[in-house]
Length: 195
Length: 195
Image (cartoon, rainbow over all chains, first blue to last red):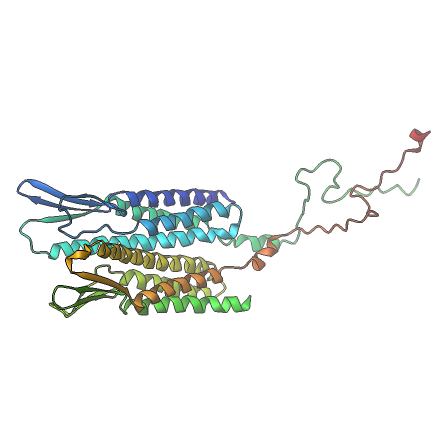
């Protein structure tokens, strides 16, 4: 575990947390002003928070809560398990990919809602705004991708150069003590011949 | 091992191809009865068509996920191309996981939005004489299958535990019999002390 990978693992958790938080924030809002009165529709990814239109506009929440939480779970689990089983690191990439796909779908849904509502011929202006939830989801997906890459084991081209040197010293003891033979042995004591 | 290496790219390409094909097939349709003539609205990932139609032949889909699916499929194919050469395979294998994850994320998002629509359809009052029916069609089945196949391919593309093993550098053989010489030799009894 290098510092980079530990940093990556921590960022994976951050991204997972952001993704879950994003699903509870406002995904989008629709606002209509009629004669000084403001009618507003707000929805998170789970439920409608406020609907002054009482369902007349047939607006539904953009459903990304379950996929986002699923992706966050995959990321968090793989980050935890990767401390034990290094091969699980690839799971954080899977989670990041999932989250990126979910975020993209969510953004696409908001866009299509905006165009759909703009097509409605109405005497009043209908304003659709993208909520903090979608923005945060996109941020979470970005952080997830960066952290997943940091979390991976990158190839080390320098290693082949090291082994080519020829001499490798293996030290078995963690803490060498005085009883060990020194790496290059003891000098042979040569007795003088004219003794 | 050789089989596994060959199966993985095949699965990945198959999943990507299926996903793109599935996008042009009908994923789900809603049937409305009770308004006079029966109305069937069918959706692909790109367009929505209504039968009988009362306007333009095809409108943009309510949940447009065409481009996200195509781009994720392209990422998966790019990963397969990278995996064909040993030098670039290091980048290809993680990219395969990310791409397959993104594809699965988009499909999961799409599916959960249609689930939400199904919930909404079922919540309508049953005594109004109107009936709604939501059918999942071949496009949806293909999409889910494509996502699962791509994920399986990405999992198989990863390095197995066999190729990780050479990392163990130091091998200590210990025979463990009683007549072994202890690591620091056998102590010579000091005869002067025995007297």
